[in-house]
Image (cartoon, rainbow, N blue to C red; front, side, top):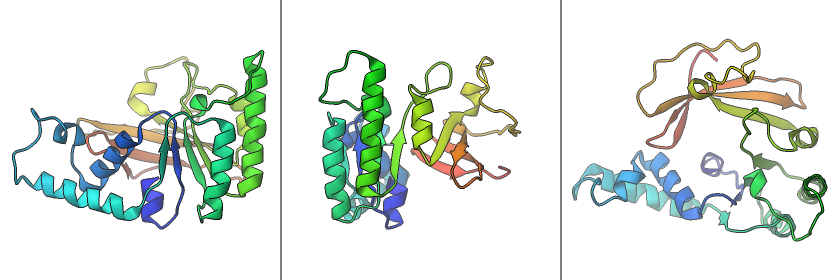
Amino acid sequence: HLRLKRLGIDVPFFSLETPSSRIVSRYISEIGKVNMFKMSNPRLHPPPFHPDWERLKAASAEVDELGLTVFDGNWDIERIRTKARQLVKRGAQGIMIDNLVCIKTRKQFDSQQRKYMYLLDKFREIREDINKPIILLAHPNADGNVKWAGELEDLADVVLYLFDVEKEGERRDVDLYGKLEIVPRNLPELHQHIIGKVQKNRDGATPRLEMEFDLEYQTFRPLGGA
């Protein structure tokens, strides 16, 4: 979301799982390269006049200037559809939703399957309404799959699966790598080796991304050799 906005691409973010204050804190951490957990803790933050305070101030000013749009709280699919249409009319170039299982509906259903099918229909309607990209985030379950993922993949143009090489490599019962050759990395502490595996792409190409995620500053960086 932040990277898109810095490129001049306006994609409002529906953060259904995380409060907007925490999202903005992550943006400040990435821009200013400051540890916001330490900066907000009186027992851990640096002394007055430390350079981190100036970086935090400058990063906060950039976030304000960017005018990022983040919606949090309890949003149902019907309300998201209405708001998405309004946002696109005002110039939005897509929407982002985090995450799939947090989306509710005003309707009642006698089974989860009927509920999922209804939500899928609503996603189709949103896509037709706005004719813009919809970026939808979801967490995999213990089997490496997402609830109702099959139907969702049919609807999607691109499916990108992110996983932590060290953590997921311990799960021998899940074939996450397929034919991928993954080169071991010696990364610093608080840095994760992340693979972005394109599982579907309507254009045909299914590349992969190899990244380093800096937990301290909430920042992704590309790794060579992918």
